[in-house]
Each structure stands twice: as C-alpha cells, then as structure tokens.
Image 1 (tube, rainbow, N blue to C red):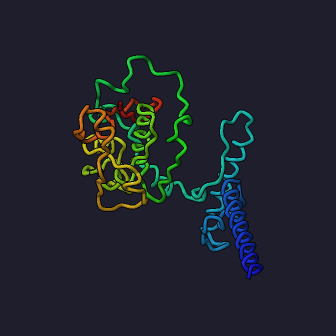
Image 2: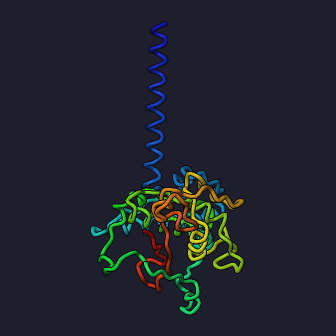
Image 3: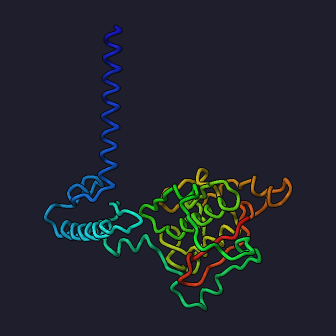
Length: 274
C-alpha cells in the first residue's frame, strides 16, 4: 500500500514536471522568432497549406520576422522584438484594433473636445525632462484588447492608472471594459462605439461624469455588452471630500479634470488627479 502511494506520488510529480516543461516551451516559442509553420501551431491557425490565404499570411509573417531580426541586430536597441498573435494579420485587420487618431484632426475641431482644469497635473513647476514609466507597478500589467477595437478605452484606463499611482502611491487597475460598454458615442466619433471604436476624449468625459470601476469589478472580455457601473470607490472619495460623503464622478477615483494635448506632444491625453 505504501509502495503504491509512493508510486502514485512519483507519477504525479513526473506529470507535473512534464506540464511545467510543456508550458515553458510554449512560452519560449511564443517569445522567439518562429518559422511560420511553428507560428501556425502555437496560435492555432487553420490555413490550408498551399492556398492563396496561406501564402499571403506567410508573406506577411515573414516580412515582420525580417523587420524584427533587423531591429534585434542593432547593438543600441533598448528592447527586443518578439512574435505575437497579430503577425499574420493584414493592415486592414490591424486597423480595426487601432481605432481613430484624434490627434490627426484639425486643431479647431479638437478644441471643443478639451476639458481644462485649473489644477492640471497638480504641478506648479515645469514637467521633468524624463519619466521612467516602468518604475510604476501599473506598467507591469500588459493589457490585451483581443479582437475588439477598444484601444481608445484601454488608453484612457491606462492613463488613469498611471496618474492614480503617481499621486496616491497605490497601484490600481481600472476597468477598460466598463468604458467600452458604457461610453455613449451618438455622433459616431472614431467609430460606432464599443468594440467598433470611439475616442479617448469620450472615455475621459464618461469617467469624469460617472467615475470608473476597478477591473476586478468589471473584468475585460473584449466584447460589447450591457453597461455595468460597478460600485464607486470610497477611499479616494472620502480623502478628497474630507468627510464620509462619497464624491461623485471622476472625483470618486481622484480625477479632477482632463485635457487633450496638441499633436506631437508626449501623450495625447492627460488626466488631472490628486
């Protein structure tokens, strides 16, 4: 009986090691510059070998591999290029994820979208010459928008996470999904709304009026859905109001305003927080 239990334990340990090794190999494969056949396997593609689509996808993939290898050969590079699941997508397919570039519109049309705050950035001195964003805990959390044109919502939530950590010292994760589901887009700015596209300005305006849930309350799905507001954050609201009464809208997460910066500045949109 004891021998049987020991054998079972040994078998379980061996199975566990096998699973760990398999997972590790899959991870390493995904990070390296794979041949196209391996890429297809890792990302579960079903192209028919020899078909026109297969050849088109392979051409796209191999061109991106060549570009990555050229980049990785540069001694002065600051980062290494690796394979992701978008490397065989066409430009038209990628465009569905990129959304609308509000900074490319005429200055006059952008002016009406800006919201000014007398305490913008909460700074009286000049901005620093550089900011190392990877020192923030929020930068370690990489967001994947999946097959949803939600770059505008993810950008807004990420900006708010950065400013929340800068001013409070506490890393937070805000819900991009709530922005996707709840932000109105009646004029079809940047798309038809939700996963079909909108703008970071519309997202900021929504958050300023209604606040924003934590990601744990409204997790990301990469799909449109019925608006879910979640519960308002209480700790920051009480801090700002100086009482036990909840602040409303953006104030509930420490947001006092936002502004779109002119084109070619460091960022397109900043949140004003404290």
